[in-house]
Length: 422
Image (cartoon, rainbow, N blue to C red; front, side):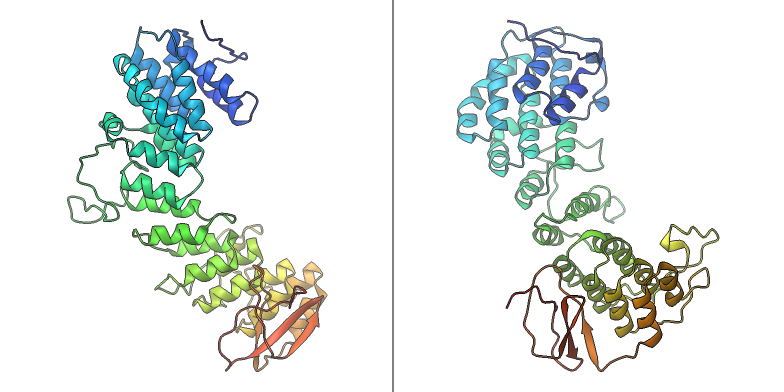
């Protein structure tokens, strides 16, 4: 029985069917019906399009099957569909029962390796490490991939939710080729993780090793993920924390992650945009405090640029104090002053932080900047990640929050803000 083809008025069946499935306009079963119809002989003008025009990993593998089949067709694709659906639903026991018979049947058509790669893609897309681990343990089927560039799988890996378990499996089996379109899968190739491979000049091939780690490290910068575990996994495999990475993390990440991150840095980046990024994006007093403790210069000022874009904080000689005053962040302004920020520094327009605060209508900040006197105690910023601790030092109320001064000679103490808990 022939499968229906629903073009929806488009000539891009592979791409638009995948998009419709992604946005749940069609079910997984209907999507598979559209795709597998090509294996049964349904042909359209777009079937000859290049794989680069197809973004969805599973659609890419089906298109590769169409090319491999040539003029041949498969009368019944129900077993392929069932195997895909069981994989999508994470039913590993059923996959184990079906996979060997299905792939053995497809060997005669020359598409068994493509269907197996599609299963690897599915495991990455649904973040199922058990399924991926099982598939990669099938050495007979893994060997079928030898000589392939695995472009669909690389696409699936780049889109998957970061996971230590998935990363470990992919690296152990050398399945990740980030940035290397001409590299092919060779299970017998002399390539070992986590040891980088020198090139002919004896230096590390940054494209073949470091970019893979950099890509995943960037993907780990997402609150809601186990970012600390992800980063530690990459650090253990040679990832180097750079100034750019710290600056990117300061933009979005939590204080607890930033504390972990700066503890892994051996070089202190005094002249860095990290404080400015933290101010312009996260407005986090605690992250600012952490970065200063890590060695960033509280008075770092952006260099002079010929064109002064008022909407680009890097172009107008800003300091963190200028940014805090512009954002109306009283707690950060107080913190920066306690940490040694200079009040008389002017930006590219000749404005001090006090002038900027006045222009923004932040009278409390203007008063603080005008009358501030350094105290013997250190200002401790409020915690934002709810890691509360107790302190018996002097405390007072401000804006409904409990702020605490801790003597400078006291042992280093984290936090302090009262959320109404003991």
